[in-house]
Image (cartoon, rainbow, N blue to C red; front, top):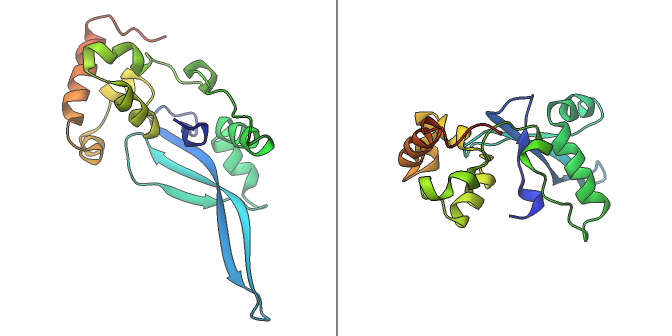
Length: 164
């Protein structure tokens, strides 16, 4: 997974995630001249959801948006400061996420490396997040998600997947 694809906890929640990305805004001046500017924007979504909300960072909302996702902003700034030097992918502890890393349940739940990478791209980092997926999130995630949720619950119930 590319570091720019990481999702971070939003509003201190384990169930919503966000990240800052660059967006290009195009328009025309009164003179008719076309212009484009690049601005940061906050993408936000519920873990496991495909539906993403999008807010462009402007002077009036910058502090509020950064406060909603401070780890995401710090990561975005690291990427912008040295795009050629990829920042290290943060650990769950660095992200402020409590729970058992999904890698720890790989064998029990049948998660291969591709599935783990895919989960992380969806903002799902822990076995607890998989176990807590709603029916709607399972529907959004597609085929196999109800089984993943069931196996994650079994893994946690076995006492093997204790929160870190």
